Image 1 (cartoon, rainbow, N blue to C red):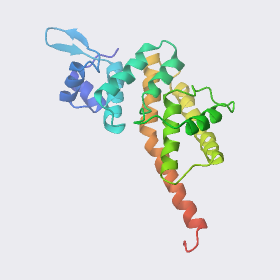
Image 2 (cartoon, rainbow, N blue to C red; image 1 turned 30 degrees about the horizontal axis):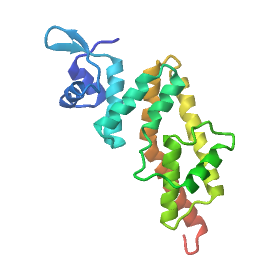
Image 3 (spheres, rainbow, N blue to C red; image 1 turned 90 degrees about the vertical axis):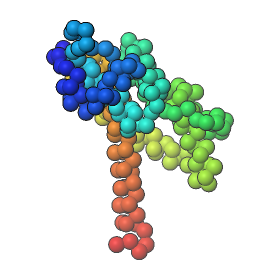
Image 4 (cartoon, rainbow, N blue to C red; image 1 turned 135 degrees about the vertical axis):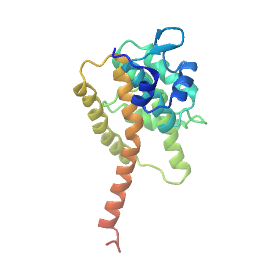
Length: 212
């Protein structure tokens, strides 16, 4: 651990000192190494944790209790793949209402195609079924073939994320790797959404009548 004082920890993480102290009180950040009665030293793990908490709060819009659940999921699993998966589960919000049996069946059929090992009644599958219900309710149903196209398309960026996870630093420990994966998801979601909107604009200009 390369030690640093709180002022440097604040500078490195981009989190104000007052907020660092708040996260310490809320136990979202582990305590540093005590040096005397009123001072402590911190390390790279604290920088990573602060960046993660900041992204979850400011970018993902999570409340502190949800952030605690993400951190607990990261820490509960010793297996790297399970730790990443458990932390990502907390990124899918629980729906206000249970999804319809029809949408659940559509999601189960998608997962049964052989390319996915996700739990058909898990948090992500439930969130997807609820999203399909919302489309139906708005009069904009998503056809099965379009859903399948979306599913195939999103695998490429997910595979790229995991490839970079190992390539960037093959020695990452479990918490560092999970932090990397969760941060990547939270911070790149807006990139993927914006690229999709740009693609719509591009294709509309190329294909629709009256476009220039």
